Length: 129
Ligand SMILES: [Zn+2]
Image 1 (spheres, protein in one colour):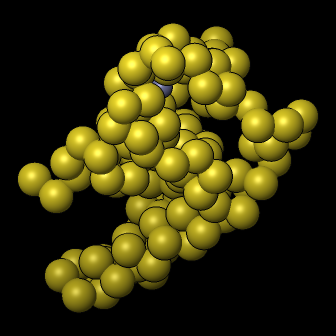
Image 2 (cartoon, protein in one colour):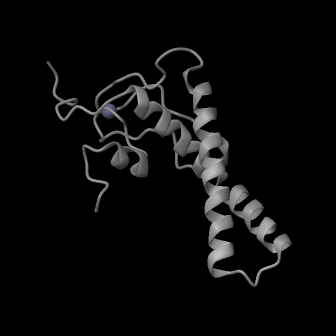
Image 3 (cartoon, rainbow, N blue to C red):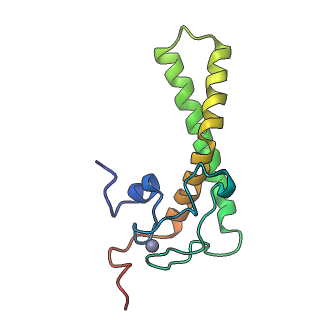
């Protein structure tokens, strides 16, 4: 498993606090439509503030865009390599389908990736000084 605790990938894949890798990052799971992509105000374990400044997560839109492009390229390439019998329209349909189905997850993912740019892991983050 490459996503070991202490790597940014672990925090991203598990949607855990970027600082201590213990606390939950989101208010709920990514597919909770009442709290879609809502980030907690702070980590319940190490108490780091997730919202570094007002509007901090606007920047996550850039990540979200990059993820969208990556998803599109992945689906498109997969179709052309292994499912080349699919018509162009069904390939477009697949891209749209995956974009819609995965968008809550990509939304959450873009925020945790964004947070990981600015918050780094500390193995002793939970230790009170
Ligand atoms: Zn934490």
